[in-house]
Image 1 (tube, rainbow, N blue to C red):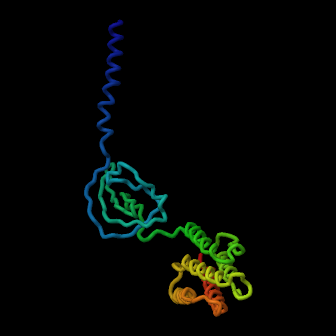
Image 2 (cartoon, helix red, strand yellow; image 1 turned 60 degrees about the vertical axis):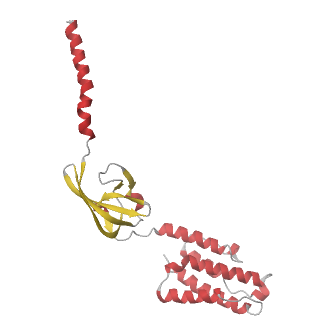
Length: 239
């Protein structure tokens, strides 16, 4: 009876030890088979879902597309794979230093949408740097992080001022105001086009090319104000 009991235990242990060795090779086999890969004409895409993998075998996930919904990718290759017995098409996409394979079904043709909140934040930060270089920055900070309030700030900062009588250092202040206004325009000018951009560029050049002296401070003030009013109106219409 004891011999029979020992034999049963040995048999059970043998099965436990042998079973993993029998099943491991099967589970370790890749379930993805790459049927073909080929180059494609470069085309831009964006997406919201899916994973981006390091290889067409989908063995290692590098990125989640949900974190890059505002990123534009360029597809350069495609692969046909068989995953769990079903065929699918992958695309090899790149954006800067980031690259990898993703299921083609997760891509949408065309450039990614603009992250408006991020663009507003960046614009506001850049505008504040330009504003702080003006002679009247302390009293014209925008009330909120909005294009409407940045527009009001432009009007309030570079308004008509008689540098001859209202300033202790008129030449220095005029030079600071001109420089800061030109920098403020640099922040926004990429958002304008057509006739509006041409007109603003012309005013920017006129103000930037002025020779500032005690004899022409009235004209300097007038040119700065004209440019500031036009820029403020244009910024107010941004979204």
